Amino acid sequence: MRLATLPRYPLATLPTPLQRARNLEVALGPRCPRIYLKRDDLTGLAFGGNKARKLEYLVADALANDATTLVTEGAAQSNHARMTAAAARVAGLRSTLVLDARHGSEIAGNLLLDHLLGAEVRIVPDKIARTALMASIGGELRAAGERPYVIPTGGSVPLGAAGYVAMVAELLTQLASIGEAPSRLYFATGSLGTQAGLVVGARAFSAPFVVYGVAVEHPVATLIADGVTLANATAAMLGLRGESRSAFSTSDITIDGEFIGAAYGVPTEEGLQAIRLLARTEAVFLDTVYSGKAMAAVIAHVRGGELNPDEAIVFLHTGGGPSVFAAGASLL
Ligand SMILES: Cc1ncc(COP(=O)(O)O)c(C=O)c1O
Image (tube, rainbow, N blue to C red; front, side):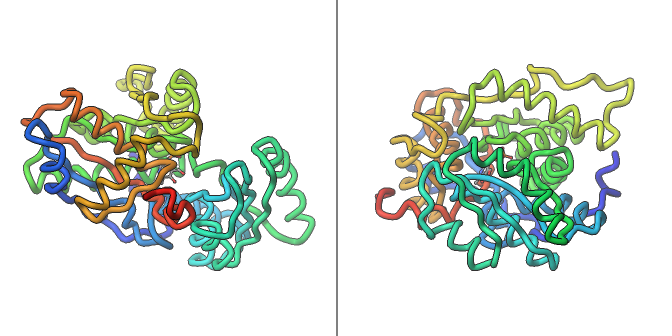
């Protein structure tokens, strides 16, 4: 596999901790499985999160292409945008962030950090305007003498997904050292780069667990189809698509669409309860957009008897902490 030779710019503090959530287990009652938290909220770059792993490969590619500016897009509270702006600074680059104000654009949380990092922030009213500006911004920056490197939403391209292929090897080493073989790896899935990387890594390194994405946006059928495409593209980039290996198909992508709620970015009651429970049992902070909804799935599955006390599961905490400060007292 080409993973070890893929250029990588160090941004994350690895390995992230794998911690048993014993207080949470007690709170969820005697039928609770062993729950481990894989703390990718502690990847270390500008308050952490899953994008640090993706950006290690994307920034290396940007530097190899002699870029001067990283360009990316997202919602105003995008964790990915904040971490891209931070990665740019670490690597000596500038950044331009195209952010939509669908859920407001108050200068707080991630958006405050974007400004502190000195990113060029372009706020547009909605996703349509965001797509339109992304189509033209490269030309605008080139005309101004920059060499832009455009990172699509969430860094979810094969190079970004490679970060989560590597993460599976890291996690399996940690699990081996404590003698655990969990049945599921839960996490919030959005633009699918994390999921595609995990799926490719799980197969490449023979992981025991099902990679269990909890959707925060989009119809599940669309997500599964896109996940298959991205997993196959990632495997191909890494040289994992030999004749002896079959392509990934829809049965390889598990996505639960039951916890999205009204829409992307709109908090759900179960998500809010999950945020409060994790804070009060483990002193771990989840967010309303991603990790809170993913943890709501874990809690519902424990309470509904879908998981057994004799099994173990891992919850991959993908970050999102800074948006807690933008959400403010609505979390209480
Ligand atoms: C905190 C958090 N969790 C999960 C995700 C989803 O990751 P992906 O876009 O790779 O599906 C994101 C994406 O922005 C995120 O910020």
